[in-house]
Image 1 (cartoon, helix red, strand yellow):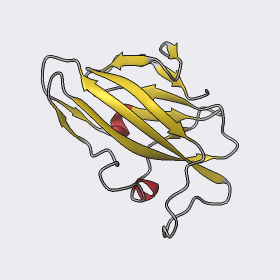
Image 2 (tube, helix red, strand yellow):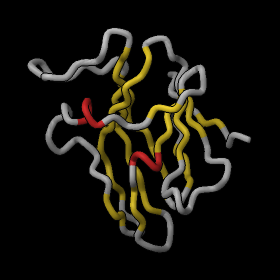
Image 3 (cartoon, rainbow, N blue to C red):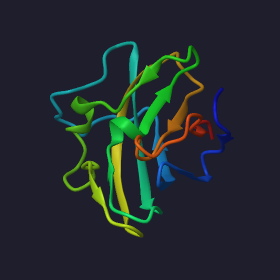
Length: 141
């Protein structure tokens, strides 16, 4: 059974973290001169987000464990390394331990089918602390 569905502008709490999506860019194109570009039937979605550790202890925030982006066929799409490497220095979210009360911000990129909208993001926070029915966020504006 899926968890509650939230709007893009909502702040969602799960697995010891709150998630605030600051912006979504779709399609997102890499900087000019990048050696990587999306495949012909694919688009890249760039998500700028903030997570805050609301648990009592230090927790790992791992984007592949925390984010499960689903398309209209319910297929899973994880964060993608190749387009992520094209993000500006200092913007790419680096998975790391987050102290209690600390907020971390960054960007990740997903490689998605162009015909896959609408998309939704299932958010688990720290997967070892997530519920059986983590919340979903509609990525439609």
